[in-house]
Amino acid sequence: MDASEPGKATAAEPGAHLASTTTTTTTLSRGPAAGRSRLLFGHTPLRRAAPPSPAPQENADPQKIAFLLRKQWALYSVTPLYKFSYANMKQYSRHLSAFVAAEKQKGLAVEVGIDLGIKVIFSTLLGLKGTDRDQAAILVQIASKTQTTSGKEEEKVVWSGWFCCVFGDDLLENVPEDFTCLPLFLANGAETYTAIIGTWFQKTFDCCFSRLTISPLNLAWMAAMWTGYKVDSHAVATELIFSVPCIPQGLDISYAIHPEDAQALWGTVQNTQGEVTQEEVDLFMDCLYSHFHRHFKIHLSATRLVKVSTSIASVHSDGNLKILQSKYLIGVLMLLTELAILQIQ
Amino acid sequence: MSVVRPFDKLPVLNSAAILLVGTDEDLQQQLAQTILKEKKDFKISIHLATSLPLPAERDHIRPRIDLIVFMINVQSKYSFKNIEASLAHVDANFFLGKVCFLVTGVGRVNRCSVEMSAVRKLGEVYCSPLIFCELELEGIRISTAQRLLRMLQICAGHVPGVSALFFSSLMRSSNDE
Image (cartoon, rainbow over the protein chains, first blue to last red):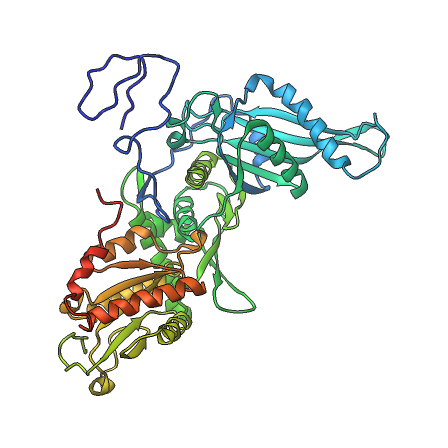
């Protein structure tokens, strides 16, 4: 499905939209004929494009990317930011530092002029784009100054959060100018800081944050797709955690699969090149469930999948993510961006 | 293996029988209680089953089944697979309006384990209406019970001039263009 570029004189086909002659405006909304139909309640796409093979991203800073790994991130979906400008990041840093300091001081009687030692740093994260149309990722960090034993002042990062958009074509098509689309937000650190930062962004850029929860269907997709990634170094067992309903004290079943077995199973199931279909994911999960049933006589399909851990990443249905490998970061973010976009639509 | 047939028994005067098939026994019980509490002017017997086929031993004392309601819980893929397997034991004549699918658990979007497209396809393939509800909420349970009671009345032939075949109008959804 291609969109006619504004400014190009095209012969109008019956039913197609006439190209707008101005080059700066983009269409605000499209009729039901064009554009992907809005997904209804509970719908997941029947097929997803297979994630791209990891190509070295231009300008990626390996140190900054390494900083994103092995940390517990809370996932949020963010509506597009209004009038956000990459050029004003220093200004935003100053405003946000003042805001955080003011929020922290609320309710305390403090002398004016004391430097609380909290600084907010805005920076861009390069190398986290899917296509060129995606906006560059932004990293926000709160650093506080602490006195070390040797008397020197040291800055320690107490909270980090980053916005990103990877293959967000669904959203970028329908968005007018002045909006920056970064639908996925990941936060690590104290919940109070997350709330303060969220309030500031909501007031300044008229956006809306909401926690990104992941349904068992999408978790099954992640388990299947991430098992398919080949990992060179030491691979961790694929672990699935299920919560059993209707039991008052709560029972969790943990099912660990040897990584090579899981990959072999996915290899036999997945045969369409370049895309993954719902049937393949269902077949993969059904094989795992029937194997478990044969041994333990428990129907895992009657329980609810809550957590998936593979050697690439581990994710919980409450919206907690931990990335373990940088090689397939784009694939992981692509799927999460899609879920974030579905949530805000 | 006994197949449930719609017309192999004689009807009883002023009464109707409904069969609820589903794996969630608690919800079935709750729905059955709610149906019984509703005001009605005919005798009703509610049969509960976790799956078909029904045991053949008690077949001779079972009345004629007027409406079969298959309960699918979207939070459990097991219930969906169970219903799919049970559908094979239903005579084809039942699918002329005497079967309906009750899709429960739709209140929590984040706990969906069954794809909506598969559920809709099931409704289309078997030409039967889908009713979405959340049986854990009292109000919705009562309104669902009222709906099912009305459908049962029509399927048992208690409403003159309206037959079960008219339920095909319930299947056209607003998404179809």
